[in-house]
Image (cartoon, rainbow, N blue to C red; front, side, top):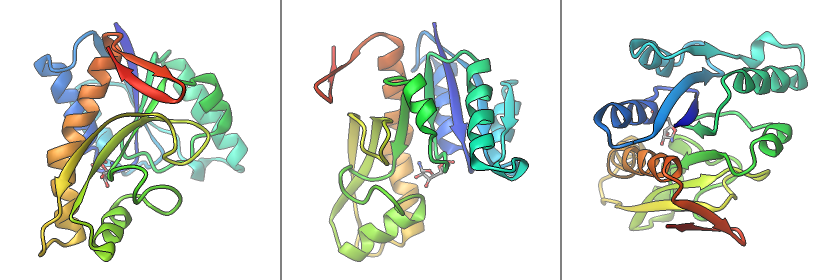
Length: 207
Ligand code: GRF
């Protein structure tokens, strides 16, 4: 049974997709052990509580220094004994000590086709604003392992989504979530829970 901790910052639609997929059996061999948010007002926390899943806020505002927050975050994660940490719209730079402690066991969903429109400054709506500003015809989403960089770890799965001429950033974000993110993240978790994911020379192979 894969013990999963989900880290969130916002509305939690990706978390909801995971919870629904566990409930429906689309994700097997998996238990959501807890949800951690850096934002006390994150609706994602309400979504977890509705399913009776332990949900806590560990906010940088509660700590004097970033180092103290990083330690509290790592401790909060450790206490849940995760086999896998899922970053589902988590707008916090993962501390290096956490990447080291959980190397190969942290995944992230990014709302573009990495390596396009990713890295520093590309998060949330900003990703889709960049897509529309560049005029690309296809975008999508990516699930990848987390390493010390930003959106630079080995790619697990991706899905393309068409950009429409009258798209606004909000409309495009919603389509990318519906058509890509909410499919990819549960898929990746189920593959990992069933031992189907292998990393070789920085590339991911699905058995
Ligand atoms: C959205 O911008 C989504 O594209 C990205 O994180 C943001 C919040 O998602 N993955 P969620 O609704 O909190 O899952």
